[in-house]
Image (cartoon, rainbow, N blue to C red; front, side, top):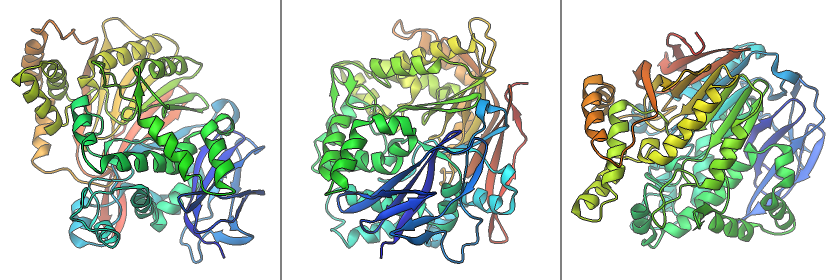
Length: 541
């Protein structure tokens, strides 16, 4: 009999449809909510994405998962309420609640790792939901990168890898291929709390560097070095293929799935055989850069009534060859700019990397980008510093950063109430408000929440605080603008909250044209995970 290995994950939900993703241990039929589909196979693993349509707006439907007619979800003796699909109302005439955060290590039974990584903020939120009324549950969860850590594996994963191959072989304790990536997703999403949360809250995702490797696509020099290794090609292909399966296809709407040629090919091959070859070819194309473009677009858009979420791929879409340096190619940027237009009250731009950084870090990154262009020893030194200090956020792609700033300013001059960039990556929490060289109607924010479940070295905490120190930032800004190659910044920003440290999840609540954010930090209280809210931040005043 077929068993459910992972999931169900509730992914894209709108007013009349929903998609639910599962992984099974063998080929079978998957039935959810009156819809039955066969699994598809990729490299001897079995998956299904069930699309429910013709649902009632603003409705709640409990669901079960049946494999070949046998109920496999909910799990026996579950402590959690039944999983359910809650569709959006027509017109967005309801309060909207979104969670977001990034950087989540798996749960660990190793005492040292457990202490180091602390309390999982998502697990703590799951336990809270168990005791809440359904009306208080979040409408959406946005995971802003680093769902898995391919380069910083847990002790349990290292032991598992050692049973497959020698850890003395490159890349050692890092994951090497598709199969090892599959293990990472199972480790990250298999605990009862996380499984139930992901089965009940519609979830959007995007990758960041650790989903592949720290500093992924920092520069062409970085790529040249990593591509010279014996193991990188297989690692990147495995990362992109599993990302497509475990994260990307769930981001798409039923209409987008129906139009996606790769999805159609995978279903055609994978339901009668194995679609591993199809996804390998797709991953090879996705990693390739030709004439300033990438072979696929991972960026996507979600609409939640009067809220638009526009998610930007800040990792795989980078253009680095032939003297180019941009966060995404021109074609993808044009898609982003076109999809930023529309009728809504709040635009959320999902970027795993913050657009507005602590001022000192921002200025250092802009100066480093200019210095790294040199062809002498100073350029080589700047490149080494770039890789060693992770100087590869939006400010180190100034042309792209300025283009994003112009887009945000244009939208803020329109009818929107807020424009918020939601980010993670930097292992601390802060809110900063932006202003421009001319008045705009909307409030513009950088909202950063990281990590959900990880740690930051204690010596880094005073450095992050120092990075917001205005006198030092002013000195660096004057120094930066001495270079004729660095344009004056087209935006200013002021930190209004933070930096906060420790595991946390952010809650964004929208009521009509009003928006607020609350940061909640996770702790163990008597052995149970709990969340402690910090003072709310009004985003609309």
